[in-house]
Image (cartoon, rainbow, N blue to C red):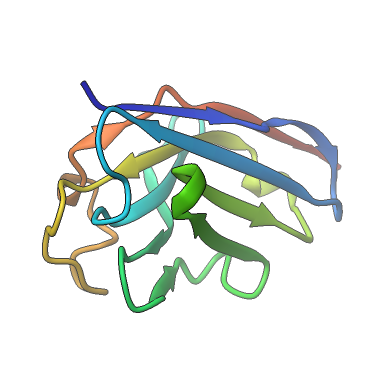
Length: 129
């Protein structure tokens, strides 16, 4: 079975930084595109960032571009989301997601939750003002 486990969430002051991690187990990680989504109370799940399984391409929501950075370490089967200059509106549960191996991925499809087949349980990020 495929498992995704997020960690690294917590409470941080506005303007601060935080890095959340997602460890994938159960199968090879290298051929899956990975994404981060977030969901605040009363709001829909929102795309944050994604990284493809090869080529080094990354994609970001406009609301986080320039502040957040997604990266991956295939040797450790881990994807990271470095969050800088955090704002109170970044407060949400952050979810890690993965596609099945070799799934077609582009800027037109990567922002859709339906593109992803596996999801973690989420980690809470709270930004105080």
